[in-house]
Length: 436
Ligand SMILES: *Cc1c(COP(=O)(O)O)cnc(C)c1O
Image (cartoon, rainbow, N blue to C red):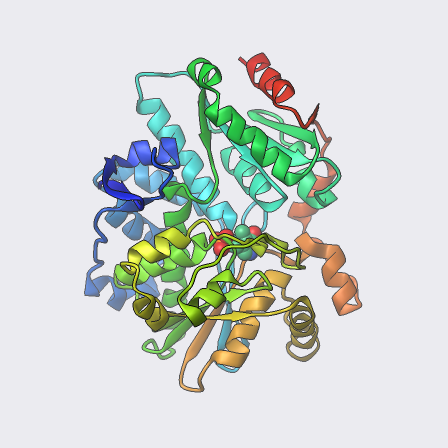
Protein backbone atom coordinates (compact mmCIF):
# COMPACT_ATOMS: atom_id res chain seq x y z
CA UNK A 1 0.00 0.00 0.00
CA UNK A 2 1.12 3.51 -0.83
CA UNK A 3 0.69 6.29 1.73
CA UNK A 4 0.28 9.91 0.70
CA UNK A 5 0.54 13.22 2.54
CA UNK A 6 -2.62 15.12 3.47
CA UNK A 7 -0.81 18.22 2.20
CA UNK A 8 -0.01 16.76 -1.21
CA UNK A 9 -1.54 13.60 -2.74
CA UNK A 10 1.50 13.28 -5.01
CA UNK A 11 3.90 12.89 -2.10
CA UNK A 12 3.86 9.09 -1.84
CA UNK A 13 5.83 6.72 0.41
CA UNK A 14 5.87 3.04 1.40
CA UNK A 15 4.46 1.81 4.72
CA UNK A 16 8.03 1.39 5.98
CA UNK A 17 8.90 4.99 5.21
CA UNK A 18 5.63 6.27 6.69
CA UNK A 19 6.32 4.40 9.93
CA UNK A 20 9.99 5.37 10.19
CA UNK A 21 9.40 9.04 9.29
CA UNK A 22 6.14 9.57 11.18
CA UNK A 23 5.34 12.90 9.56
CA UNK A 24 5.57 13.61 5.79
CA UNK A 25 8.38 15.87 4.59
CA UNK A 26 5.81 18.61 3.87
CA UNK A 27 4.50 18.26 7.48
CA UNK A 28 1.30 16.55 6.26
CA UNK A 29 -0.05 13.34 7.79
CA UNK A 30 0.15 10.05 5.94
CA UNK A 31 -3.06 8.41 4.70
CA UNK A 32 -3.53 5.05 2.97
CA UNK A 33 -3.92 5.60 -0.76
CA UNK A 34 -6.81 3.17 -0.99
CA UNK A 35 -9.30 2.05 1.62
CA UNK A 36 -9.72 -1.69 1.14
CA UNK A 37 -13.07 -3.39 1.83
CA UNK A 38 -13.66 -6.37 4.07
CA UNK A 39 -15.85 -9.13 2.63
CA UNK A 40 -19.49 -9.55 3.81
CA UNK A 41 -18.70 -13.09 4.93
CA UNK A 42 -16.28 -11.71 7.51
CA UNK A 43 -19.10 -9.85 9.23
CA UNK A 44 -21.48 -12.83 9.10
CA UNK A 45 -19.07 -14.87 11.19
CA UNK A 46 -17.51 -12.16 13.33
CA UNK A 47 -19.40 -13.03 16.53
CA UNK A 48 -17.51 -16.33 16.72
CA UNK A 49 -14.06 -14.81 16.42
CA UNK A 50 -11.54 -13.67 19.03
CA UNK A 51 -10.00 -10.20 19.29
CA UNK A 52 -6.74 -11.55 17.87
CA UNK A 53 -8.42 -13.36 14.96
CA UNK A 54 -10.48 -10.33 14.00
CA UNK A 55 -7.51 -7.97 14.33
CA UNK A 56 -5.30 -10.14 12.17
CA UNK A 57 -7.85 -10.17 9.33
CA UNK A 58 -8.23 -6.39 9.52
CA UNK A 59 -4.44 -5.91 9.76
CA UNK A 60 -3.84 -8.24 6.83
CA UNK A 61 -6.34 -6.28 4.74
CA UNK A 62 -4.46 -3.06 5.50
CA UNK A 63 -0.82 -4.15 5.76
CA UNK A 64 -0.80 -7.57 4.05
CA UNK A 65 1.04 -6.36 0.97
CA UNK A 66 3.82 -4.79 3.06
CA UNK A 67 4.45 -7.31 5.84
CA UNK A 68 4.70 -11.10 5.50
CA UNK A 69 1.57 -12.78 6.79
CA UNK A 70 3.34 -14.84 9.48
CA UNK A 71 5.23 -11.81 10.80
CA UNK A 72 2.09 -9.68 10.83
CA UNK A 73 0.23 -12.40 12.69
CA UNK A 74 2.93 -12.51 15.38
CA UNK A 75 2.85 -8.72 15.67
CA UNK A 76 -0.94 -8.64 16.06
CA UNK A 77 -1.13 -11.57 18.50
CA UNK A 78 1.70 -10.18 20.60
CA UNK A 79 0.23 -6.66 20.61
CA UNK A 80 -3.19 -7.85 21.74
CA UNK A 81 -2.30 -10.28 24.49
CA UNK A 82 -5.03 -8.79 26.72
CA UNK A 83 -8.80 -8.59 26.38
CA UNK A 84 -10.94 -5.58 25.42
CA UNK A 85 -14.31 -6.58 26.86
CA UNK A 86 -17.64 -4.93 26.14
CA UNK A 87 -19.56 -4.47 29.40
CA UNK A 88 -23.26 -3.72 29.72
CA UNK A 89 -23.85 -0.56 31.75
CA UNK A 90 -27.56 0.15 31.52
CA UNK A 91 -30.43 -0.03 28.99
CA UNK A 92 -29.03 -0.01 25.47
CA UNK A 93 -25.58 1.25 26.52
CA UNK A 94 -22.27 -0.59 26.65
CA UNK A 95 -18.73 0.27 27.71
CA UNK A 96 -15.79 -0.90 25.60
CA UNK A 97 -13.13 -1.30 28.28
CA UNK A 98 -9.81 -0.39 26.73
CA UNK A 99 -7.88 -0.39 30.00
CA UNK A 100 -6.83 -4.01 30.38
CA UNK A 101 -3.41 -3.57 28.75
CA UNK A 102 -0.04 -3.08 30.48
CA UNK A 103 -0.46 0.66 31.22
CA UNK A 104 -4.25 0.52 31.56
CA UNK A 105 -5.08 2.86 28.68
CA UNK A 106 -6.13 2.46 25.05
CA UNK A 107 -2.83 3.92 23.84
CA UNK A 108 -1.27 0.53 24.67
CA UNK A 109 -2.78 -0.92 21.47
CA UNK A 110 -1.24 1.55 19.04
CA UNK A 111 2.05 1.85 20.92
CA UNK A 112 2.59 -1.91 21.13
CA UNK A 113 1.75 -2.43 17.47
CA UNK A 114 4.00 0.39 16.33
CA UNK A 115 6.92 -0.84 18.46
CA UNK A 116 6.76 -4.31 16.94
CA UNK A 117 6.34 -3.07 13.38
CA UNK A 118 9.23 -0.63 13.74
CA UNK A 119 11.40 -3.39 15.23
CA UNK A 120 10.55 -5.57 12.22
CA UNK A 121 11.35 -2.88 9.64
CA UNK A 122 14.59 -2.14 11.44
CA UNK A 123 15.66 -5.80 11.41
CA UNK A 124 14.93 -5.95 7.66
CA UNK A 125 16.86 -2.78 6.85
CA UNK A 126 20.53 -2.88 5.78
CA UNK A 127 21.32 -0.17 8.28
CA UNK A 128 21.35 -2.05 11.59
CA UNK A 129 22.08 0.93 13.82
CA UNK A 130 19.71 1.66 16.73
CA UNK A 131 16.49 3.56 16.13
CA UNK A 132 16.00 6.20 18.80
CA UNK A 133 12.41 7.08 19.64
CA UNK A 134 11.96 10.50 21.25
CA UNK A 135 8.71 11.17 23.06
CA UNK A 136 7.59 14.14 25.12
CA UNK A 137 4.79 13.34 27.53
CA UNK A 138 2.44 14.97 29.97
CA UNK A 139 1.61 11.50 31.32
CA UNK A 140 -0.27 8.83 29.37
CA UNK A 141 1.63 8.74 26.08
CA UNK A 142 5.00 8.25 27.74
CA UNK A 143 3.87 5.22 29.70
CA UNK A 144 2.18 3.50 26.74
CA UNK A 145 5.14 4.15 24.41
CA UNK A 146 7.80 3.15 26.96
CA UNK A 147 6.02 -0.08 27.86
CA UNK A 148 5.17 -0.79 24.22
CA UNK A 149 8.82 -0.54 23.19
CA UNK A 150 10.29 -2.20 26.29
CA UNK A 151 12.69 -4.94 25.22
CA UNK A 152 12.10 -4.45 21.45
CA UNK A 153 15.48 -5.16 19.82
CA UNK A 154 17.16 -2.39 17.85
CA UNK A 155 15.02 0.36 19.36
CA UNK A 156 15.76 2.74 22.23
CA UNK A 157 13.26 5.15 23.80
CA UNK A 158 13.85 8.52 25.45
CA UNK A 159 10.85 9.80 27.40
CA UNK A 160 10.96 13.50 28.29
CA UNK A 161 8.62 14.70 31.00
CA UNK A 162 8.19 17.85 33.08
CA UNK A 163 9.58 17.41 36.58
CA UNK A 164 6.89 17.45 39.26
CA UNK A 165 4.04 17.90 36.76
CA UNK A 166 3.19 14.23 36.22
CA UNK A 167 1.31 12.12 38.77
CA UNK A 168 3.35 9.60 40.77
CA UNK A 169 1.42 6.70 39.20
CA UNK A 170 2.15 7.96 35.71
CA UNK A 171 5.81 8.71 36.44
CA UNK A 172 6.40 5.23 37.84
CA UNK A 173 5.17 3.71 34.56
CA UNK A 174 8.12 5.00 32.56
CA UNK A 175 10.88 5.69 35.11
CA UNK A 176 11.09 2.18 36.61
CA UNK A 177 11.51 0.12 33.44
CA UNK A 178 15.25 0.37 32.68
CA UNK A 179 16.51 -1.73 29.74
CA UNK A 180 16.09 0.23 26.49
CA UNK A 181 14.01 2.99 28.13
CA UNK A 182 15.59 6.22 29.41
CA UNK A 183 13.43 8.70 31.32
CA UNK A 184 14.56 12.31 31.12
CA UNK A 185 13.20 14.59 33.81
CA UNK A 186 13.14 18.15 32.52
CA UNK A 187 13.14 21.10 34.87
CA UNK A 188 10.42 22.88 32.88
CA UNK A 189 6.97 22.43 31.36
CA UNK A 190 5.47 19.93 28.91
CA UNK A 191 5.86 22.56 26.18
CA UNK A 192 9.60 22.73 26.99
CA UNK A 193 9.83 18.96 26.57
CA UNK A 194 8.09 19.15 23.21
CA UNK A 195 10.38 21.95 22.09
CA UNK A 196 13.48 19.90 23.01
CA UNK A 197 12.22 16.96 20.92
CA UNK A 198 11.46 19.27 17.99
CA UNK A 199 14.96 20.77 18.22
CA UNK A 200 16.51 17.33 18.09
CA UNK A 201 14.56 16.42 14.93
CA UNK A 202 15.76 19.62 13.25
CA UNK A 203 19.41 19.19 14.33
CA UNK A 204 21.14 18.07 11.11
CA UNK A 205 24.38 17.09 12.81
CA UNK A 206 22.59 14.92 15.40
CA UNK A 207 20.46 13.23 12.71
CA UNK A 208 23.65 12.25 10.87
CA UNK A 209 24.98 10.61 14.00
CA UNK A 210 21.85 8.75 15.09
CA UNK A 211 18.50 7.58 13.68
CA UNK A 212 15.70 9.53 15.34
CA UNK A 213 11.96 8.99 15.12
CA UNK A 214 8.82 9.93 17.01
CA UNK A 215 6.03 7.77 18.39
CA UNK A 216 3.14 10.17 18.71
CA UNK A 217 -0.35 9.45 17.45
CA UNK A 218 0.25 10.90 14.01
CA UNK A 219 2.25 7.78 13.10
CA UNK A 220 0.17 5.45 10.89
CA UNK A 221 1.42 2.43 12.84
CA UNK A 222 0.01 3.88 16.05
CA UNK A 223 -3.20 5.25 14.66
CA UNK A 224 -4.54 2.60 12.25
CA UNK A 225 -4.35 -0.44 14.62
CA UNK A 226 -6.83 1.33 16.90
CA UNK A 227 -9.58 0.33 14.48
CA UNK A 228 -9.16 -3.34 15.51
CA UNK A 229 -11.15 -2.93 18.69
CA UNK A 230 -14.11 -1.27 16.98
CA UNK A 231 -14.52 -4.45 14.93
CA UNK A 232 -14.25 -6.47 18.13
CA UNK A 233 -16.88 -4.30 19.84
CA UNK A 234 -19.22 -5.01 16.92
CA UNK A 235 -18.41 -8.73 17.25
CA UNK A 236 -19.36 -8.68 20.93
CA UNK A 237 -22.73 -7.10 20.11
CA UNK A 238 -23.20 -9.82 17.47
CA UNK A 239 -22.27 -12.52 19.99
CA UNK A 240 -24.92 -11.24 22.40
CA UNK A 241 -27.48 -11.57 19.62
CA UNK A 242 -28.32 -7.86 19.80
CA UNK A 243 -29.50 -5.76 16.88
CA UNK A 244 -26.61 -4.83 14.60
CA UNK A 245 -28.06 -2.22 12.29
CA UNK A 246 -28.27 0.78 14.60
CA UNK A 247 -24.96 0.94 16.42
CA UNK A 248 -23.73 4.33 17.63
CA UNK A 249 -20.19 4.77 18.98
CA UNK A 250 -19.15 7.64 21.26
CA UNK A 251 -15.42 8.38 21.44
CA UNK A 252 -13.79 10.68 24.01
CA UNK A 253 -11.61 12.74 21.69
CA UNK A 254 -8.50 14.87 22.02
CA UNK A 255 -6.17 14.60 19.04
CA UNK A 256 -8.84 12.59 17.15
CA UNK A 257 -6.54 9.65 16.35
CA UNK A 258 -8.85 7.16 18.01
CA UNK A 259 -12.07 8.25 16.30
CA UNK A 260 -10.30 8.74 12.96
CA UNK A 261 -9.16 5.11 12.91
CA UNK A 262 -12.79 4.09 13.49
CA UNK A 263 -13.95 6.25 10.60
CA UNK A 264 -11.53 4.42 8.33
CA UNK A 265 -12.86 1.13 9.76
CA UNK A 266 -16.36 2.24 8.77
CA UNK A 267 -15.11 3.05 5.28
CA UNK A 268 -13.70 -0.51 5.15
CA UNK A 269 -17.19 -1.85 5.83
CA UNK A 270 -17.69 -1.89 9.59
CA UNK A 271 -21.44 -1.29 10.00
CA UNK A 272 -21.50 1.55 12.51
CA UNK A 273 -24.45 3.85 11.90
CA UNK A 274 -22.91 7.02 13.31
CA UNK A 275 -20.26 8.38 15.67
CA UNK A 276 -20.26 10.97 18.43
CA UNK A 277 -17.01 12.85 18.99
CA UNK A 278 -17.20 13.72 22.69
CA UNK A 279 -15.19 16.73 23.83
CA UNK A 280 -14.46 18.32 27.18
CA UNK A 281 -14.28 22.13 27.22
CA UNK A 282 -11.62 21.96 24.50
CA UNK A 283 -14.26 21.83 21.81
CA UNK A 284 -12.82 23.18 18.54
CA UNK A 285 -14.18 20.15 16.70
CA UNK A 286 -17.65 20.62 18.18
CA UNK A 287 -17.54 24.25 17.07
CA UNK A 288 -16.41 23.15 13.60
CA UNK A 289 -19.46 20.88 13.30
CA UNK A 290 -21.76 23.77 14.26
CA UNK A 291 -20.22 26.45 12.05
CA UNK A 292 -18.10 24.78 9.38
CA UNK A 293 -15.18 26.88 10.57
CA UNK A 294 -12.10 25.35 12.15
CA UNK A 295 -10.59 27.72 14.66
CA UNK A 296 -7.78 26.17 16.72
CA UNK A 297 -7.01 27.80 20.03
CA UNK A 298 -4.87 27.29 23.11
CA UNK A 299 -5.93 24.31 25.21
CA UNK A 300 -7.42 24.73 28.65
CA UNK A 301 -6.89 22.39 31.59
CA UNK A 302 -9.73 20.01 32.50
CA UNK A 303 -10.16 16.86 34.62
CA UNK A 304 -10.12 14.79 31.41
CA UNK A 305 -6.62 16.08 30.69
CA UNK A 306 -5.62 13.63 27.94
CA UNK A 307 -8.25 15.42 25.84
CA UNK A 308 -6.95 18.93 26.53
CA UNK A 309 -6.10 19.65 22.92
CA UNK A 310 -6.73 22.96 21.21
CA UNK A 311 -5.64 21.98 17.70
CA UNK A 312 -6.30 18.24 17.16
CA UNK A 313 -3.49 16.82 15.03
CA UNK A 314 -5.69 14.28 13.24
CA UNK A 315 -8.26 16.85 12.11
CA UNK A 316 -6.35 16.95 8.80
CA UNK A 317 -7.09 13.24 8.40
CA UNK A 318 -10.81 13.67 9.06
CA UNK A 319 -10.96 16.42 6.42
CA UNK A 320 -9.03 14.30 3.94
CA UNK A 321 -11.21 11.24 4.50
CA UNK A 322 -14.37 13.23 3.73
CA UNK A 323 -12.83 15.24 0.90
CA UNK A 324 -13.16 18.44 2.94
CA UNK A 325 -16.96 18.22 2.89
CA UNK A 326 -18.49 19.64 6.06
CA UNK A 327 -21.84 18.09 5.11
CA UNK A 328 -20.33 14.62 4.69
CA UNK A 329 -18.53 14.90 8.04
CA UNK A 330 -21.74 15.98 9.79
CA UNK A 331 -23.58 13.00 8.30
CA UNK A 332 -21.28 10.49 10.06
CA UNK A 333 -20.21 12.42 13.15
CA UNK A 334 -22.01 14.58 15.67
CA UNK A 335 -20.35 16.33 18.58
CA UNK A 336 -20.87 17.35 22.17
CA UNK A 337 -18.96 19.29 24.79
CA UNK A 338 -19.03 19.02 28.58
CA UNK A 339 -17.64 21.07 31.43
CA UNK A 340 -15.72 19.59 34.36
CA UNK A 341 -18.87 19.94 36.49
CA UNK A 342 -20.88 17.89 33.98
CA UNK A 343 -18.15 15.26 33.75
CA UNK A 344 -17.97 14.94 37.53
CA UNK A 345 -21.77 14.77 37.83
CA UNK A 346 -21.89 11.96 35.26
CA UNK A 347 -19.18 9.99 37.11
CA UNK A 348 -20.96 10.37 40.45
CA UNK A 349 -24.45 9.49 39.18
CA UNK A 350 -23.25 6.50 37.19
CA UNK A 351 -21.32 5.14 40.16
CA UNK A 352 -24.21 5.70 42.58
CA UNK A 353 -27.00 4.45 40.31
CA UNK A 354 -25.43 1.89 37.99
CA UNK A 355 -22.45 0.84 40.11
CA UNK A 356 -20.20 1.52 37.13
CA UNK A 357 -16.91 3.30 37.71
CA UNK A 358 -16.07 5.79 34.95
CA UNK A 359 -12.83 7.63 34.46
CA UNK A 360 -13.17 11.32 33.48
CA UNK A 361 -12.53 10.58 29.77
CA UNK A 362 -14.97 7.71 29.45
CA UNK A 363 -17.52 9.81 31.35
CA UNK A 364 -17.53 12.42 28.58
CA UNK A 365 -18.44 9.76 26.02
CA UNK A 366 -20.97 8.03 28.26
CA UNK A 367 -22.80 11.32 28.81
CA UNK A 368 -22.88 11.78 25.04
CA UNK A 369 -24.85 8.53 24.79
CA UNK A 370 -27.13 9.41 27.71
CA UNK A 371 -28.10 12.63 25.94
CA UNK A 372 -27.89 11.61 22.30
CA UNK A 373 -28.90 7.97 21.90
CA UNK A 374 -32.33 7.04 20.48
CA UNK A 375 -34.32 4.14 21.98
CA UNK A 376 -33.92 1.97 18.88
CA UNK A 377 -30.14 2.41 18.80
CA UNK A 378 -27.39 0.47 20.56
CA UNK A 379 -24.74 2.71 22.09
CA UNK A 380 -21.10 1.87 22.72
CA UNK A 381 -18.79 4.30 24.48
CA UNK A 382 -15.03 3.92 24.84
CA UNK A 383 -13.61 3.66 28.36
CA UNK A 384 -10.14 4.84 27.35
CA UNK A 385 -8.31 4.54 30.69
CA UNK A 386 -8.67 2.85 34.06
CA UNK A 387 -10.18 5.21 36.68
CA UNK A 388 -7.30 4.46 39.08
CA UNK A 389 -4.94 6.32 36.75
CA UNK A 390 -6.75 9.46 37.95
CA UNK A 391 -7.13 8.26 41.52
CA UNK A 392 -7.11 11.65 43.26
CA UNK A 393 -9.70 13.22 40.96
CA UNK A 394 -11.94 10.16 40.90
CA UNK A 395 -11.92 9.66 44.68
CA UNK A 396 -12.69 13.29 45.31
CA UNK A 397 -15.67 13.19 42.95
CA UNK A 398 -17.08 9.89 44.20
CA UNK A 399 -16.32 10.59 47.85
CA UNK A 400 -14.95 7.09 48.29
CA UNK A 401 -11.67 5.20 47.93
CA UNK A 402 -11.13 3.20 44.78
CA UNK A 403 -9.00 0.12 44.33
CA UNK A 404 -5.75 0.38 42.44
CA UNK A 405 -5.14 -2.65 40.20
CA UNK A 406 -2.12 -4.83 41.00
CA UNK A 407 -0.58 -3.92 37.62
CA UNK A 408 -0.36 -0.25 38.65
CA UNK A 409 0.86 -1.04 42.15
CA UNK A 410 3.67 -3.14 40.66
CA UNK A 411 4.96 -0.10 38.75
CA UNK A 412 4.85 1.97 41.93
CA UNK A 413 6.99 -0.55 43.80
CA UNK A 414 9.77 -0.25 41.19
CA UNK A 415 12.87 1.92 41.64
CA UNK A 416 12.75 5.25 39.88
CA UNK A 417 15.63 6.02 37.54
CA UNK A 418 15.81 9.23 35.55
CA UNK A 419 18.28 11.66 34.04
CA UNK A 420 17.66 15.20 35.26
CA UNK A 421 18.32 18.10 32.91
CA UNK A 422 17.49 21.78 32.67
CA UNK A 423 15.15 22.90 29.90
CA UNK A 424 17.96 23.59 27.45
CA UNK A 425 18.84 21.83 24.24
CA UNK A 426 22.58 21.48 24.91
CA UNK A 427 21.91 19.27 27.94
CA UNK A 428 19.38 17.14 26.07
CA UNK A 429 21.69 16.67 23.11
CA UNK A 430 24.49 15.60 25.45
CA UNK A 431 22.29 12.86 26.95
CA UNK A 432 21.57 11.55 23.44
CA UNK A 433 25.22 11.67 22.36
CA UNK A 434 26.37 9.97 25.57
CA UNK A 435 24.05 7.06 24.79
CA UNK A 436 25.95 6.23 21.57
C1 LIG B 1 -5.11 10.09 24.52
C2 LIG B 1 -6.38 9.89 25.28
C3 LIG B 1 -7.65 10.28 24.75
C4 LIG B 1 -7.79 11.03 23.43
O1 LIG B 1 -7.55 10.20 22.32
P1 LIG B 1 -7.27 10.86 20.89
O2 LIG B 1 -6.90 9.72 20.00
O3 LIG B 1 -6.13 11.82 21.07
O4 LIG B 1 -8.51 11.55 20.44
C5 LIG B 1 -8.80 9.97 25.46
N1 LIG B 1 -8.72 9.35 26.67
C6 LIG B 1 -7.54 8.98 27.21
C7 LIG B 1 -7.53 8.31 28.54
C8 LIG B 1 -6.33 9.23 26.54
O5 LIG B 1 -5.17 8.86 27.10
